[in-house]
Image (cartoon, rainbow, N blue to C red):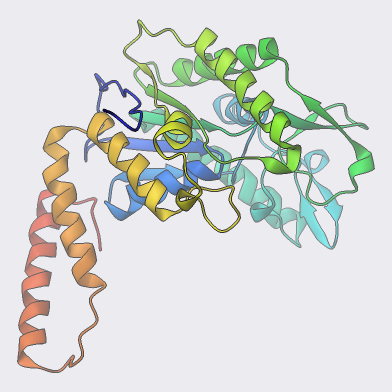
Length: 316
């Protein structure tokens, strides 16, 4: 008798390897996965404009990048002693307006280059709920603690999300026709919107995404991170203390399923080498000056040198 479900995950026809260049964008779960890419020393760039949750704001940033539409003074505003842009996360906000504009436009230029070079892009959608600025009638990516009376909260219609996803795909493929796109829906629960509202939000993302994706195209894949969390890990012991975000055990489990299906078999042995080195680097000796520990350090450095010779982009 089987007491748990197991979500089927299709193997990618274009897996990621150590020569791949990955761009990850989207919700905070995108950051969780990117941390794994960083740990295993893949070539990975994550959220150059900070965490972005909704599909329209993600599309807007891709449009800026792909069309080289740089930020101007009219695109930023001053609030709580800092300059912000409604299109990006508050992590990029700055007390100096010119520095903020320079940071944003540098991110556009660098992301444009990275997107041209990328072999894979991972897009993680978090929510269908958006805030619309009443004055400009524009959907914002982040409210930056501006009073809520200046916004209208809306649930994006499936048709709008569907069109936004299609626009994003077209923008990316025009700039880089050979890029492989992996979509996923964040397993993070947005309970501040309400329990029913969170499910409604996710259902709109699911409906739009699965209506848009052409499963006949090997260049576009869907990874079921939300389904794995909801069905295989359906227990609060797999959540962090806030009961909203997957905890490290859950992230490790989802990463394991991702790596088994989206990373090339030839790279798995390299990942094992990297993991051994990472664990050794974190090792703290009780007697750092002992001969035994010095021999350990020499052997570790030899492993690092051999791996860096084979893959020059890897550094520890």
